[in-house]
Image (cartoon, rainbow, N blue to C red; front, side, top):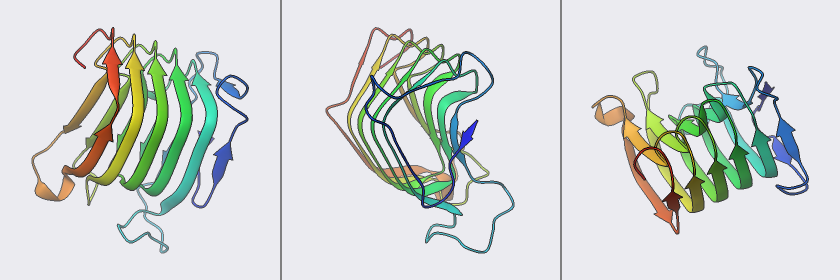
Length: 173
């Protein structure tokens, strides 16, 4: 795995030039906070924050998601393609204050793009925007935005999606 830490920028030279090919091994690009919370936290309680991922392709991951972001605050993902992964293309869980721009998720076995919240997270998934996210030819839903529990503290709220599209996915948009 490539595990992102706080205050890190991972920038490629472009989607066609920089390809992280995991060759169907059990690896992927991850930004996941450990459950033992450290002393330095963001305003929303997560210890991983302020990360940027841009201008690259993630290919052929065999993790639950090719790009997996959980319990992270204040991040940007720009000009990233996730393709041909054996699970979900992109999963974002229990994260706040993030922006996604020009994201392409295609030909993944699972859903193309998943945003969710679960009972482990304290604050849910909130305050985010996505512009020009395209999910195409995935084996599940193109987009899935869903809270797995009904607690108001771990909900999904306050977000905007603009100019996003889902086509030819096996499931719903």
